[in-house]
Amino acid sequence: MTDGAIPLQQVLTALGLPPLGLAIACVAGGLLAWRGSRLAGLGTAVAATMLLLLATPAVSALLMASLEREVAAPALTSHAVPEAIIVLGAEVTHGQHGAEVGPLTLERLRAGAALQRRTGLPMLVTGGVLSPGDPPLAALMARSLEQDFRTPARWVEARAADTRDNAVFSAAMLHQDGIEAAFVVSHAWHLPRALEAFARAGLEAVPEAPDLAAAPRFDLPHWLPRVDRLVDSWFALREWAGRLVYAIRDRG
Image (cartoon, rainbow, N blue to C red; front, side):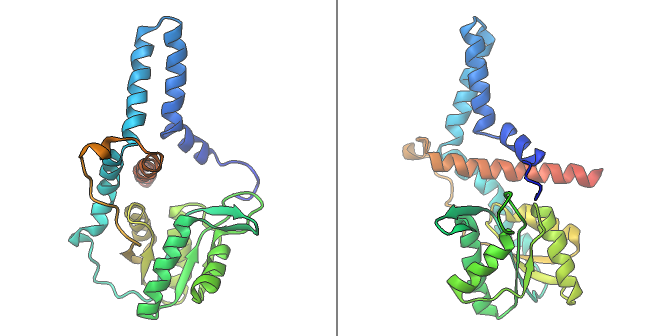
């Protein structure tokens, strides 16, 4: 992802997932309805309703819970003895001093640093170039670990473009040092896909999440749309879409 072009995968993801996909459906349906199509009017109403529902705390919490329960389930308890800590990068933001780790990445680094203090295990950070002109996310993560948490990263994996790459490249680096199991730090909604990727890469992964989302509630305030809950729904739907894509690729 260093050639300056926007990856096709990002474009398709943006078009296929809410809110953009549903917003486009609303606009297109509205134009057709204005020209007299009753079916288009119905489609517009359905798309708008779905968009509103995805923005409610009740629905977003349900979507998040559908992913997080897999990490919290006792069946996922591993008997592996981790010998390292892997922190998966998420996003980059841009401030006065240029590119820096985003809020999600910082939460993962904080959890990873706390785990390192408890266990004394060495840390690996992973993340490639997300935008043209930016440094690799892993380099920013290593800097943040040093500056914000006084915790060094022993390994810096700076090539990964997605979760699958995170797993493949990180596992290869650790295997070179004879490490067969590691803690994997990410958000609980992302860990199911990450754990599947690490299993395919041949590394035993023990999940470690900053925290879990609140349990779904269905009283009236939780049916009032909020922008931040639409973001949560987008994360959850993207994870399910990503898991589907990975499953199709593996069958191929």
